[in-house]
Image 1 (spheres, helix red, strand yellow):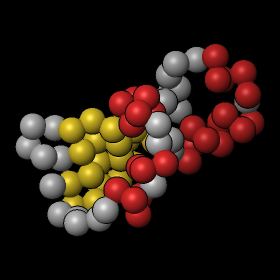
Image 2: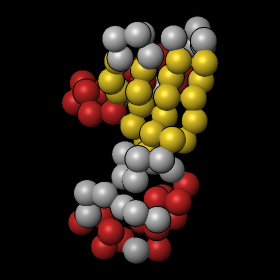
Image 3: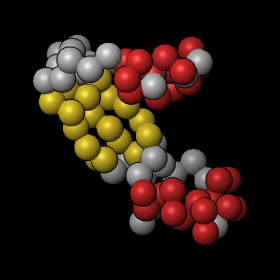
Image 4: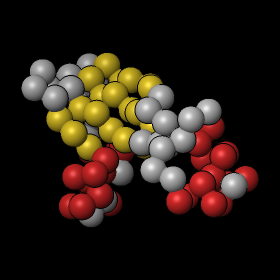
Length: 76
């Protein structure tokens, strides 16, 4: 099982944790609401997990340009 992190705004692959036996509590998943979990975490048929997060570039863009929050997708 691997956990793949992707930016929810631009689709960039942020990183992957391979063959980990990490508890969801140590990743903070238990603090998410059911709706947040549904929006951010998806499970693949091979057992891998895809997690939508935010990359550093998008975070910086949002901080410099708050009007970007009106867009669904960013290209950088």
